Length: 275
Image 1 (spheres, one colour):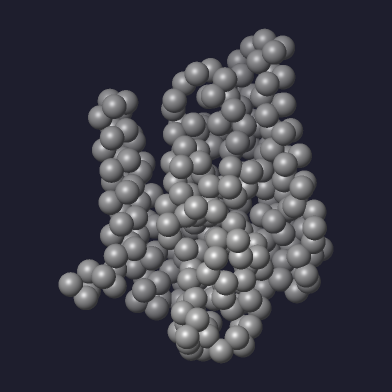
Image 2 (cartoon, helix red, strand yellow):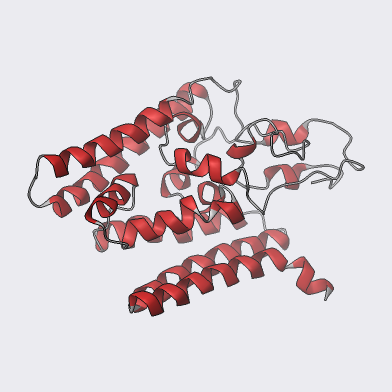
């Protein structure tokens, strides 16, 4: 029983993803969904298992397993636009496939369970940015997060304009928009990382997906909590947090609470095991 409790989180994550996999496989009559969500669920559960076993590169393994799968296999080989433009595209066509299902599970309803775990374990943009040297922000957080809302609106306007103009062969445009979008995102992300000395500057100020993720992650079931009786308020957790979250505050209104990507750097670095 003690062992099961210890590995409860990876077990729960695997069960959730397997349930989604089976439900979509049966309702959509498409074996792809069984493979897709089973693969992602197993990858994430493996990473959490390795973290519990104190393996240093546990999260990086998950990022590469899931990020490369979505970028190369789904995006480049299957030619699916898994960015937010793909979500708008399928939404406008009224088809519950590919990007719409991905967004529903990973970025709209899923965060009610695992918060912004997507950002920490599956995002193919952050997968590259996390290789850069500024893993801990060297400067105070800037108050320019409103740019994310503009990026979000521009993605919607871009796809809406294609439909309103009745442009032909939109599927092909969506594929090339995926290619161009990733090049732009990587370029901006890497530039901002060096300008602000912060690998996650793109996530904090530019990424449009956070418009979905932030409000839903406020209610997330899985979140880092502080054992206040053990905490000595050394501040180390705050210093190593890539997203500037005050994890010593257990309330849902804690500073930058909806920014937590569950990277567990605070947990690994707490000298008193208070997190």
